[in-house]
Length: 113
Image (cartoon, rainbow, N blue to C red; front, side, top):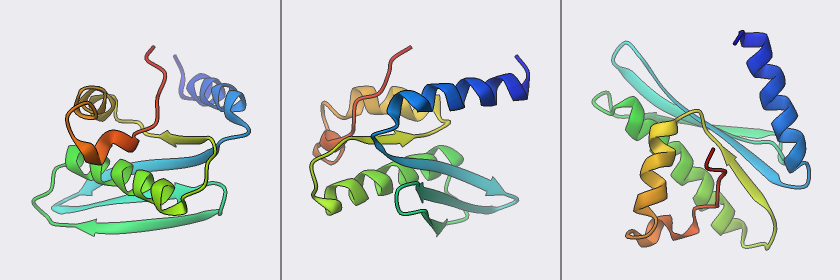
């Protein structure tokens, strides 16, 4: 599938969540530098976090997801929220971990396709 086709598919899928407050998360590593970012689409505001050089991309992705979840909890408002990530391994981990870790009890449901 081409990059353009994937983009169209993602945008089409997001249309199903128009009334949700959306957060987009990403972790990255460039050379030895690791960090992550969170974009709050409702506030049109992003945050970046510089992490330890020894942090893996996987942990950076989890940190970003957890930060988005903390923002939802901090907001304290009832509503519909959607946390978007490109890390399937983190989603698989969260599917299991939220049953055992209170921190992840706030993890929103996600489609399991």
